Length: 248
Image 1 (cartoon, rainbow, N blue to C red):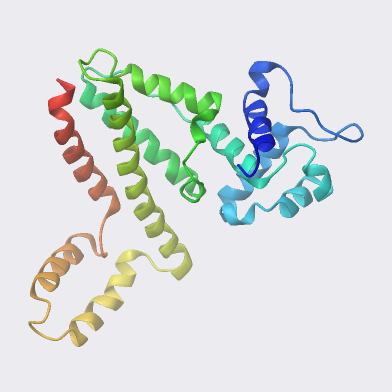
Image 2 (tube, rainbow, N blue to C red):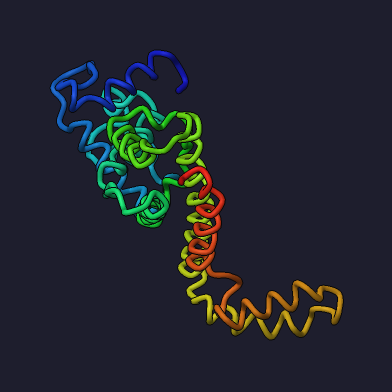
């Protein structure tokens, strides 16, 4: 947050439903609510990315003046934090599975689905986002999955953070794959049909033996430079394998 005052307002706005009040606003009787603003901002971000959510564009969408918007939300950073918490409220919270490993796998899949549904989340800084009620609710439920383990609280937090970091990285690849298809108007298979033969024609023989061999194998299987979905399942299994000694 840019100032201490903005940080205080952020907390009050995030917890407005629980407190039963909204942050104080100046001026005449308002025509929209904070909920209206956050919902509209999420819709704009889902359609065109986080960059499309400027205070001016949002005010125009709501039919109010840009300066009026600031009487509800003091800064764009505050707005983005409200958006992140609201999206979290819409996602399912995995219930415990028979094993902790299975529970963590479900946590990872829910997080990844959220990123794919709202790709702009990858553009929002994750730091200090755990302030809101919905983010805290999710964190509480995640920690409950680890409560019976004989590990330290720092290890519990690190496990949740590790799974989240892996999911974020893979989701970034998956979102990039989808965007490439939209921006070029070509599926990965169509793109590979064009690029594969051209690359084979210009790549000097023997200079990149490993890259050529492995890249060709991947291209033949996936008809693409890679497959984020397959990498996710492979990587998740390896992450959970690494955690297995702690999760007994």
